[in-house]
Length: 196
Length: 206
Image (cartoon, rainbow over all chains, first blue to last red):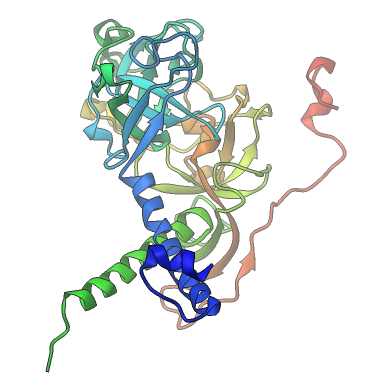
């Protein structure tokens, strides 16, 4: 065993115990880098595999459910509300199930009055401060029309580029789903409801 | 005499980065000490200077929480801010939303003369009995007359929960030493009757 190991390490160990000590030391040093990688994965950039068809045809256009798009998720600056543009695709924690995440497109910002779709109970709604109105490109998606505007605190990353499959490699299209001009009815404060 | 080379400083820097990342991981996923402030949780927490111990490992995304827990959540209407309130309703519970204190909440694009009228004492939820949707919780400050909570924000998603407050140690601004930590309990008084007993049979969960 000592001989096999030393072929990779190009060192000759005088005993099995010395090999063990070297292995343990290297493993611990490797383990100590895991929190750094975890920090990068949570706060800088990571890879995301898209599941589900709520963003069809922009992401996951195949209907067989086997081909999943692989995208680059930018987590740096993800909590900065003013850095988001209309039409950006974001990853957010599911408001109905905190353990899962969903991918949707931002259509409206705080203060804007939005024309909602079924099954939202009201026909228009004003987006609260620091919230987004998100919708999936697929007409059948479960999005803000079901659970209402989402706070920025739920957003974890923005989906910037599609990496795989290679024929769709490139930035995620900035438009898809409903046209924001038909979603946003106006700035809500011209008719802001007076509270008693 | 050879001076300390690049390898020495690079080694020190890499150790520092690794230590920092490990502490950050601990603070995000295991536990954290935080300082609370504000009147909204009187008399449970002091107005200033209460140092609390947050359990994140067990309660991070709203896992295993129950009515009566004091939790810290990310503020829905402002980024990089956290608020500390008590849970008054879990998904499926029916909550009465009463009037709340006036607090202007300006939003981008709002004309200045409308800022003070933005919340006032009532909103579209006031006076109603609301069923908390799945995946959401209803939070309420202990000092309800000085608290901005779910009566303003509505039911908040469980994913906003950062951790549960287990202990609080008061260390006043002019004190030399902190006081002994006290446990933050759930303040629940169990009685035989509840609103569930008055609901129609279809809504009773017993």
